[in-house]
Image 1 (cartoon, rainbow, N blue to C red):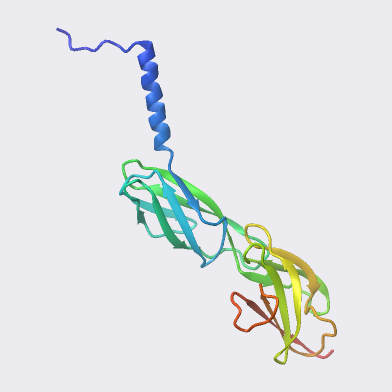
Image 2 (cartoon, rainbow, N blue to C red):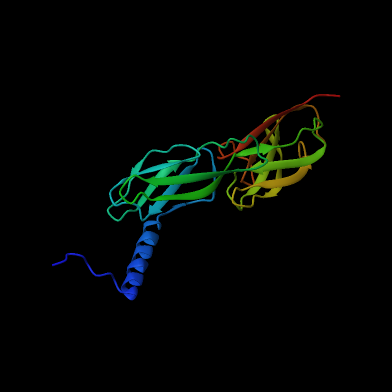
Length: 217
């Protein structure tokens, strides 16, 4: 008696093929997401993943290598990370980065999430005359933050200059203003504290402090 199996009918073969396609699709369904689209270097970031091998180690890499984590019994994970520093200096732009997640378990899943890196910084241009109007560049503020420059001289606040509102996923702003945004600039050691508060406070964080020396000409 022959032990050979009869070939599957065409309809049964189609069903089997469809099952294989569905299984393959399910095996590629792993996802990873981040809690924000843009980060300042050193800022906390949270990565979440789904559909990886249950209970298996998961490797996180991309722009830099992160510590490995273990997926839970459902194949999911959620982990806190620290954003890597931006390779671009200054406040005039952000750079793209990618988090790649590799499943070291039997499903061998791979998924990735794109994000951007930016500096928390200010750039007041290169003109040496503090009275000259130029474009100021700001980056890394929380989106929607109204950016102020608290102009101080000899321990006194001369003005609280409103530059504008940081927009976009990386909290950026470009504004036209003088190098020291007050009328009647004269000789002295000036400071401009840039932050998101309407009035000056030495304890405000985060903040950027510029020191600008003006000499008699």
